[in-house]
Length: 101
Image (cartoon, rainbow, N blue to C red; front, side, top):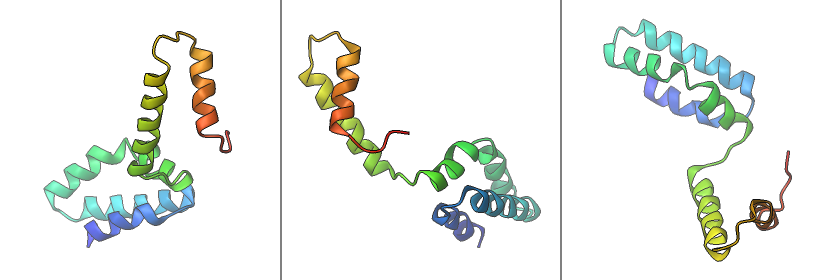
């Protein structure tokens, strides 16, 4: 049951809602009495803001991020010998012209 509820954390798009869901799950995990689940919950507790809450606000999956990283590597290989960092970042921005915050 706890495992399925932990998977549900990734479906939240509101950071406050995700935080509340995490806190409920964490409390239930600590009260479960299962040592392995308690250790796991303690281990990921410090990463919640950087993983779960960031995912709620910016729902990017690893496949998308890997694709972006590969395209940046290709741009870097094509710019071999060019030592201008400003131009390199300009090329990345032109490849991904989306909404820059």
